[in-house]
Figure 1 (cartoon, rainbow, N blue to C red):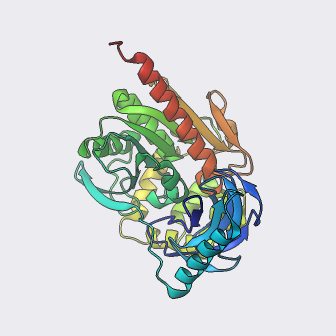
Figure 2: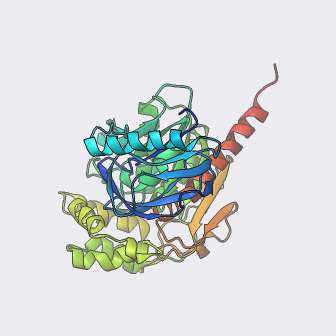
Figure 3: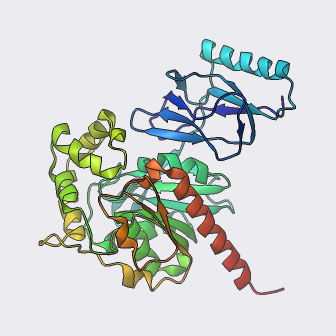
Length: 384
């Protein structure tokens, strides 16, 4: 059965145990290519699209639409047309038996850890090659009010041959609820301190929204530590900003207050689930989070509601490769803010959380700019 590839339920996030098949985007008998959209899966927090891990023919769908499936269980089989039906049937029976008997081996998920930087505990989750290996290192930095779990659809595919860390900035996720003066410099120093503590000499930095501004500031401060930058709807560029969303998110104390603002994050507002709202409320109710969000709000906005961050001069100080990804329907930081930036990937039908709505676009951009960085490093290497 060497030519039969199992498509398994992915582990998207630390807490995911099962996923529900909501829609198959291919049918049995379809020719599919690695990376094609294959099936929509509901994780409770949000629905994501699983791409095919290989090329061939979708020979069997094991888990039908509507079924809840444990992480790691086989949901489909992909194989060349030349593989005999009897062989595929045997593999399908084994997968169904595995599901029925509940003997599914859960796929390995991210490994979590903490480091201390400037007296603050920083939490992170790592996937891929072990730290200290010769593989490339990618660090994912979330935006205002987010956390490391926001990269759930991006971290796994990027971890193929790389070490990928998703970091909780100070004040967020499981990190210490203290942002000091809340400045961009303080947050950038947290990222650089994280790299130093893990003995990472150089990394590809990927930042979303406020995290985009943070990684730009980190690259400007220590460019030798940054292989490339991928900016996903970054703050600090242009003059358009949804102050209603930012102030509403910072002050919301109930699901009813919060949910209308969460709709601004997606092109498809149906992606805002009760679980997503409840998880954010749980975070907002932690001791110290209200002060963190208020302090960072002052980093993002002036008193007259104009943007307080202006990051373009910092980006000009960094000479490495840079790519930008922006959702065409971003209602928080509109895509028009990308004017003046180069190498911009505008993603249709995506909002501010483009890495959740269209994760493959972000993955492709990171891989592309990492390849550009590698090519540049090769050209710059002295000849023997």
